[in-house]
Image 1 (cartoon, one colour):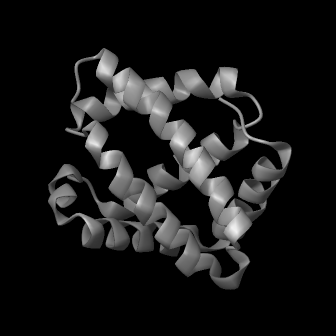
Image 2 (cartoon, rainbow, N blue to C red):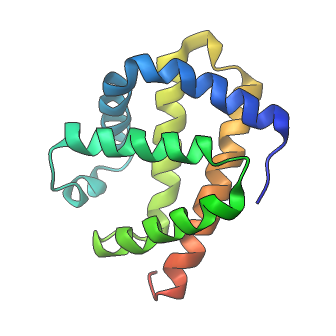
Length: 141
């Protein structure tokens, strides 16, 4: 699991721009997610503001851990195991990734360049690959 230094830099810079609008970005993410796949709404039983804070904290940890994948992988594997208990399936990763990309595009506007988008796509694939592998090890479809 590795990204280029340029990709990591693009991800960090773009995520730094999200911090000041984190609450709005989280709300936008969930709106986008439920528009993409309304069947996912029942998986979110807690307050979406609280859930949004958790989402932003996890994204922050993932972004900070990109240069140390040996430390990030166990965190993602633990996250995957917890998500099995919430009813998450490996098929849910595509709508979640797409919702995040749409959210970044909407929130960052013209600062979300093609190069930045491609860097985020790379990191989303890496995160999804680790989490889906762990979920499959535990029998999750």
